[in-house]
Length: 209
Image (cartoon, rainbow, N blue to C red):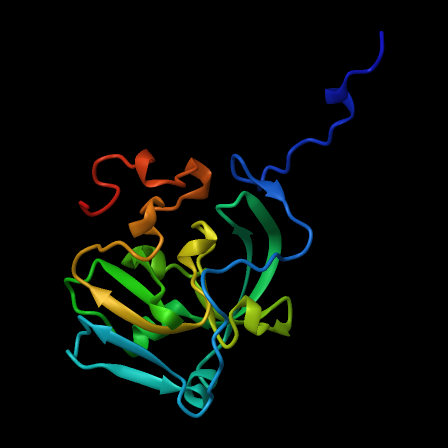
C-alpha cells in the first residue's frame, strides 16, 4: 500500500490559532493611502475620560524619549496568515496609562490613526504587558508601509486591532465599535476562538448596533 498524503505532512504548529497558516515574510495590508510623515507637527494624544479631565500629548521627540520595552509575540492577521516570534520594541501601553491615568469609570479605549481609522479595545486588554506602541520590528525601524512612526501591537487579538500610524488614544466609559467593527468584523477579534465577523457575536460581545 502506498503512503498517504497525511503521513508526510508536517504537523501544525501549536502556536497557530485555528484557520491560520504560517507566513514567510510580512505582507503589506492596509485600508487607504500611506500617510506622509511630518515630524514637526506629529504628536500622540490621549484624550477623553482622563482622570484629570485634561488632554495630554507628546511630540515626536518626547514620545521617543519615553521608557522603551521589547516584547516577543506572534502576529495573527484575520486574512489567515500568522507570523511567529516577532520582536517588537517601543513604548508599552501601560506606560501611557501610568503617565495619563484614565478615570475610574473607563472600561474601553479607542485607538485612533491617520485618516480617521480606529480600533476599540477593552481597557484590560490595552493595559496588558504585551500591548506595545511599536516603533521597531525585529530590531529594525518600522517602514512607513508597516506603520512608521508608530503602530499598536496587541498580540492577543487579530492584527486589525493594532492600527498603523497611530495618533491618539481615547479613554471611554462605554464600548464603541471602531472602523472595521462597524463594517462587519467581530468586536472582540479573538484569534483562538476565530472571532472574525460580527455575525458570530454572542450577546455581550459588543455594543448594540
